[in-house]
Structure formats: C-alpha cells, structure tokens
Length: 190
Length: 190
DNA sequence: GTCTATACAGTGATAGAC
DNA sequence: GTCTATCACTGTATAGAC
Image (tube, rainbow over all chains, first blue to last red; front, top):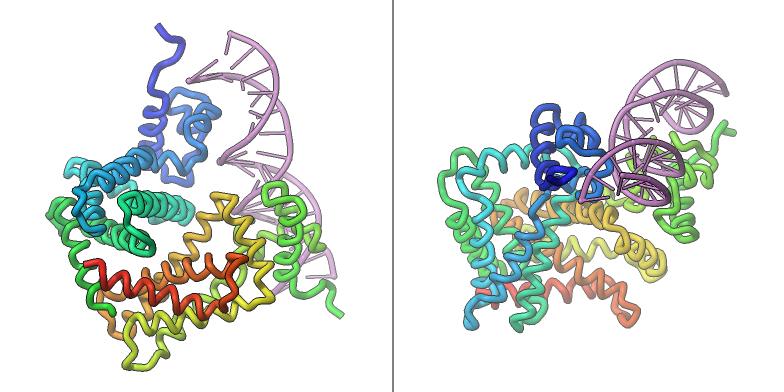
C-alpha cells in the first residue's frame, strides 16, 4: 500500500472544477484546491505550473492529435482538407455528455481576462501545430499559416455554435460547416 | 510649481524599460520601477493594472486608429482594402528611429510566456476592432472576421520582417506586401 | 485629484526531509 | 512523489497627506 493515493493530478483537476463551481474562480485558492484533493499546496504547483493551468488540462493531448491527423491526411488532400480532418478529430472532446461541463468551464474563462489570455496562448499553440504539420506535408508559406488560421477561426465559430443551447448539431458537423463558410468567404475576398 | 512632478505615467514607463534592459524582466520588481521613477509602489499600480501592462503602453491609441481608418475608408473599398489601409496607418508607430527600442521590447516579450499571453490579448483586441469596424461598413459575417484575421496575420508577418536586421523596407511597404501575399494564397486555397 | 503609507491575501519558488 | 516551511513579490484595499 502506497503512502499516498495515486492520480494526484486528476484529483487536483476534479477538486478545482468543484471548488470553482461552488465558490467561483477568484475565491478559490490553490491551497484550497490542494486541501480538497487531500494534498499540500506545494503539490498543486508541482503538477500545474500555475493556478490557471488546471483549467486547461489535456490541451497538450489535443495538440498531438491535431499534428497526427494533419500528417496522416491523404497525400492528395488539400491544406484545407487536412485542416478539416483535424478539426473533426477534435470532436472526441466535445461529445453531448460533456456539453454541460464544457459550458461551465467556458463561462469561468470568459469571466476572467487572465484565463482568456491563457486560452489564447493555447489556441495559438494549436494553430502553430497545424501550420507546422502542414509545412511537414510540403505546404509552403504563407499558405500553411493561412490555412491553419482559417482552421482556428472555423474551430472557434464551431465551438461557439456548439455551446449555443439552441443548436443541436454534432461538433463534427459544425466544424465542417464553419470551414466551408470560411472557404467560400476566402474565395470571395479578392 | 506642482508639489509632485508631472507625467508619472510616462516616467514609470521609461523607468521600466531601463530596468528591464539593465536587470531583465524577472529581476525587476514593480517597487523597483516606482523607485527609479521617484514614486511609490502603490502609485505604479494606480497607473498600470499589473506589471506586464507597462510594456503595452499606447496600445489603446493604436486600436482607435485602426477603427477610424477602417471606418473612413472609401465607400467602394473592399474589406481587404479597408484592412490594408488600417495596417499601413500603424506604420506611425514603426519609424526607423524606433527600430532599436521596438526590437528590445520584443525580445523581452518573446522570452516570457506571460508577456506573450498579454501580447496575444492585445492582438485579439486589434483584430476584434477591425472586424467590428468592417461590420460597421456593412460587411457581413464571416467575411468581416476573416478579413480581420487576414489583417492580423499580415501585420504579424510584416512586423517580423521589419524587425529582421537584414530587411530595409519601410513598414507600410511590408504590410502591403504581406497582405498581397495572403490575398493570393487565400484565393488559391479553395 | 494625485500621491503616499501600510497592511494584507495569495502566488509561485525553493530547500530539506520522508 | 510528497510534505513542511519559508520567502519575495504581486496586486488590493484603506486611509490619509498635500
């Protein structure tokens, strides 16, 4: 029997979500999260570089997924088709049963500029990942960056629609639709 | 004669730049900046909401400029033409005599993730400003957001080139060139 | 209306022990 | 990998000086 319970990281994540819901983000301290998880404050900071990061748990995995899907797209796929495949793949994180949790999390982020900042950094990382993967496919600049940016914008628009209580479409359908709209708009721009 | 020296805000800004150059960003405290400026720590936080913000002094003015130029573009200008005019207008902040200061500032930002975050937030604000101004011209979504994003990407690419010591072009020329490249790439995407 | 003084909660880092 | 303990610094709040 170990001297401490395993899965400290996940317990901290869960405890944080609970406390944010109960007390709000600001009123919740890192020490309080650790306590709820049965750990010490310093243990929190060992697992998460700062308090904000606990809300972006799992983002790195999503990044790896994006890179893999873009890289593994058919050789004759256009840049936008490869990006579209990547966006659809992110749907694994946005099943119907996760809607409520995702919505609550996003409300917290939207209400706190410091969390908006962190979110933008994560989005930039995702966009950069897609651009790099596209260049790995031989797509030249500035096409790679542009396609990745279009993907980022499409993902953001799909995400917003998915969170809209009035919407009923699956996430994959929304990303496809958003990217289509943007491709048409791009073609009409110049 | 006033009981205190005027321009506290600018003095703080100048002192901060100096100390960042001398000691690095991390080793410089808000109290140290205030002391160098002949002020108290609490006065620093009266002028800047946090330590990072001292490096983004004047960003709001640039935002207002973007909005005005997009709004005042000729009635028959396309969305990208309006955006192009806005990007060229930002050139006032990037004259040759400011190159060294801008370069030093950017080196500090690039070396500190927390400053990268703040930079992304400012960029998003600029992009949002342009998109809103375009909608004000009657440009529908998602064209307005797309054009603004293209502008953001063009600005970023022009900025990077302008900071490249090997480059000699004026900022306005670089923005025009970057936006042209992106328009071509967008047309070729789908 | 701008600055100062002081006290305070919380973050995040660090060092040493189990 | 975790704990305790300590610490500098950030950022807020308050009350007051000029």
